Length: 137
Image 1 (cartoon, one colour):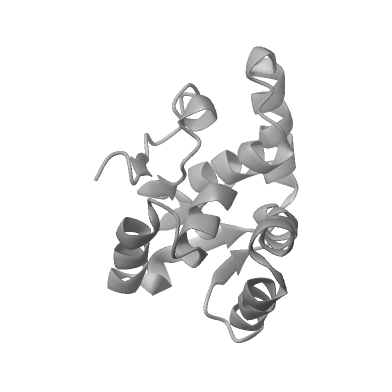
Image 2 (cartoon, rainbow, N blue to C red):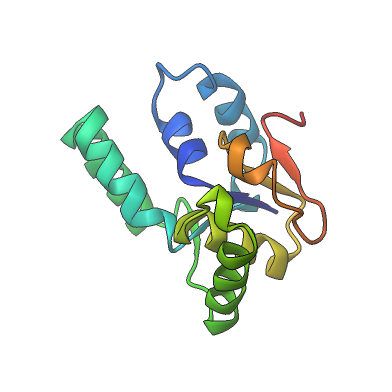
């Protein structure tokens, strides 16, 4: 299982991103293994619309509606863990989205987290020690 962070989803969609080819290959090899935590959805939607345009934003929404991405809607334990992570790593200014991604990856015992945010994900000790892709490929 690969839990995806916002930046990785954007790179997967944006053909001009330098990580696009690697992430697209990884997604195509095991698309059913990818999970998008609920918290990344509004962020991805906003950034797609603001930076890549309505066409790609709408395509993302259509892919979500058609089930191309598995969405993990989470539970209260994810929010509790996210709060704990934000408190523990206050100096990092981790934020809700990244903390929820970590909490979901821990709960689901993900083998990897797809992220380009090594500043946050590389600094936090994540239970189960998932790989950070594409860095750890």
